[in-house]
Image (cartoon, rainbow, N blue to C red; front, top):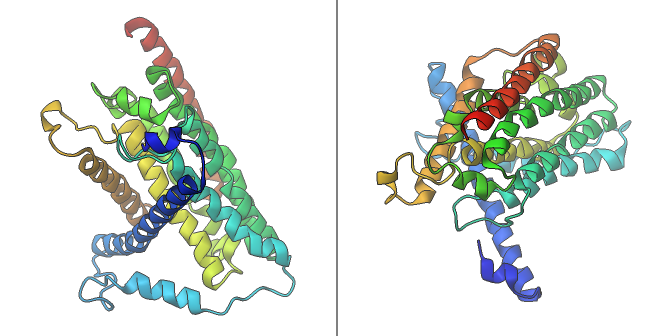
Length: 334
């Protein structure tokens, strides 16, 4: 965790090193987004009995996403005449910036983390909630009724599912006694929290899908109702910013689930400790990402009213019951 750098006096050398490390992380995340999209299209293709991308980059279509990105970068940047131009331009940046900021506190191994702060879990949840402002601004500034509906749906969905998302991790906080993500991992040496908190994990995972605006909770951008919703008027690289933020959040949320519920870099059994922690982290992380892709390939979209009812009438009471049950068990057995 680069303790020497953290405890040394700040200067241009420190700034340069951290800046370069940030650039490296950004490149890693961009690589994940590029080939994560390809993997998602391949998974969806095989599950729906078709090939998926297979034209560019050989039989596996390895260059298909690269070609799509180049196409987006070369597209004309169109701003609707009736749009609020400053906000229209700013909205994609507001949507993307928090998705990258949250990665700073996520520990990938016991030795690689950019910022080890005492409230890392709280920081992630708080900062990730800012992205919805970009969605609402993009929908409102576009001066399009479908975009505005998409932005308002995004705000309502975020408010509805942020509450059970936070409630679900309170059980983990009760058992670990900390908001520090490293401490939460270390508390799982004798048992992952997915085993100790199965109800909390299920609620958190379902709420995370809604927070990511992914199928079956992709109401803010449902194509057959809102023709892409809040970013319907966007094109080229501004549209790419919205999509980039979504997949960066897939990266961040998968990492968070791996750390909070799946033991992070810890092996499932002590005798497997000879395998590097980075390998265990990568395996767990890829499994979570695959499940996100799997769900998108198989489940239909929720109706808007049922989406809200499910969040308030099902997930929230279950999350509250989980907190009560966890507190009771902790007082009796821990």
